[in-house]
Amino acid sequence: MTATGLALGLCSALTLAGCNKPAETPAPGAPGGNAAKGAAGAPGAPEGGGGRGGRGGGGAPVGVTTVNVQKMAVQRMVDLAGTLNSPDQAKVAAESGGRIEKTFVEIGSEVKVGDPLVKLDPTELNFALARAESALRQTRAQLGMSGPLTDGDKLPNDDDIGSVKNALANLNDAKATVERSRVLFERKLISPVDLQTSETRYQVAAAAYQSAADQARGTKALLQDRRAAYDLAIKKVSDATVKAPISGVVADRPVMVGEYINERATVATIVQVNPLKLRTGVQEKHAGIVHAGQPVEFRVESFGDVVFKGKVAFVSPSLDQTMRTFTIEAVVDNSDRRLKPGFFAKGTILTKIDEGVLAVPDSAVSTLAGVSSVYIIKDNKVTQTQVTLGVRQGNLWEITDGLTGTETLASSRLNELATGTRVGPPEAGGEGGGRRGGGRGGRGGQGGTKAGGDKGGDASKDAAPAPDSKAGGDSKDSKAGGNKDGKDGKGGGRGRGRGGQQ
Image 1 (cartoon, rainbow, N blue to C red):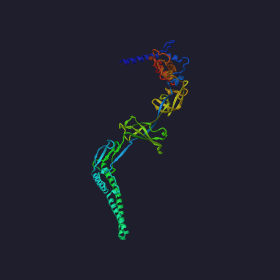
Image 2: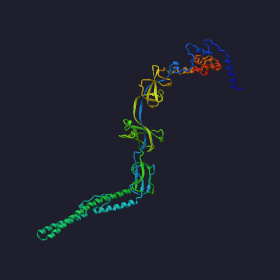
Image 3: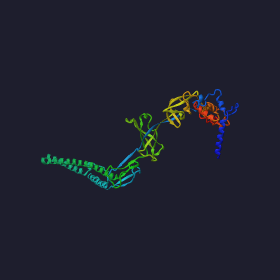
Image 4: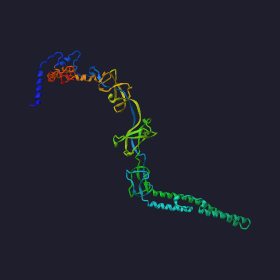
């Protein structure tokens, strides 16, 4: 037989012996298994006192910890949700048509202003430039102009143009002829027909001069047209290499080498990525507290809990009448290029900080069915008061209504409190007195009386355990007494307490 078997046999024998042994009345003051019974019959001890102690342990104060209403600073915030946009985006188009000869960038390439994107075949453009140059030189020659084309076009006076000079000379000659003819006619040296002929020639010369002057002015206007055509041809040759108009990152390049494109065909899309703009709508109730310069904090799904910061830059002066919101734009630094245009952001606008806001710890607030309340302690009595909660910072709740700031609140065992409950310091007990005293006083209490289980439980607080309590605690009488009287008090229990232990 094993040692375990021997121990079980010995325990069984001792148990039987304890059941057959008659109860002895211990000497006054002597410890024994019936001390629980004597304690139960003591004056003032309630019959069946082993039941549930209830709130306060049968009138005893509930031991609670207390806190005072505190004050804290609260950062006021306005929620936002919006999209990150590029502040500047350009769809770059070719100003000249032609075949793509070379590409210089790919999607994701970072470019600066003036960097080449694609190059067109300039052959046809060079031919057009040569034709425009020839026409310009011809017009300049008609006006008597010389020198390189790059020197510009300083227009001459009308009288300095060859055709005008010739017409002016003919006019002067005709005028002199008329004057001589008039003198000779007065002397009757020529006939009236000769005088009339000279006057007619003068009129023709005057008309020819006027025509030459008009033609000179038209040639000057044509010169300006030819100069513009020549400059445009030079520009088209230069535009054969399409360059970046802004700094940023290439988001798209839809053309390929060898492809023929027309004028104004898009060859690349460039977006500016630093800084970015966070565009969102804010409810109209916040119109009076949101303004430019306020900090913004937000997160994006791609980076989890990483907080990005920005600053409100623009606030719309009008509301969207459909959504009842007004638009704001916040500028966000993106020097590390982690954020991308199009990201969805959720965060807050930090509007102001309120100082001296009333606050209480979370442990002092009881919330049931959406209604929050606290337990105010005054003169060791509890008054349950409903409060309105604001924001939560750490372990503190903001109190917007219900407290004045001078109250003392219970912060433990709130489920045992109600208006009128007496309270005391934590060492006052209350819960333990009722619950521990009931239901577990069977062993060693000789629970053979009608109320053995209950009375033994109360007496177990004051009576010392009997030496043979462990051996005789499982007696039939004790077990029977405990189960019988368990109906009268929940503390009667099952008679399994060890020697009236607390």
